Amino acid sequence: MEQLVAAVSGPFGALALSVAILWWLATKVVPVLQKYLEGQNEKLGALVAALEKTVDAHEADRKTFEASIAGLTTRMDKVETDVHHIRSKLP
Image (cartoon, rainbow, N blue to C red):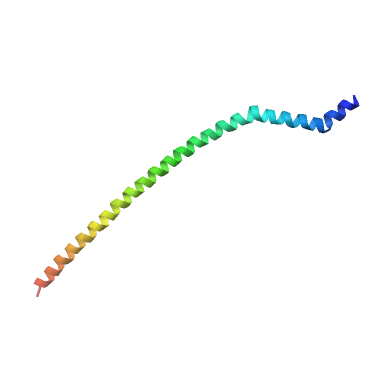
């Protein structure tokens, strides 16, 4: 009986407990963790897609903004020409 108590409370007992804990983790915790991480991966994929859409929209907005600024410069040149023409006709 003493040998059994010594074996269970000694290195053999620790090894058996470690193996039992690892088996429990592999059968109970790992599937739950895997499902959680797969869900997070899907959410992250959706966030990346939304970010890419935002960047694409920003690029389109920037092109529109640049075109508007270029058109504004052309219009300002025309207004300056008209003002200069009006000033030249005033006494």
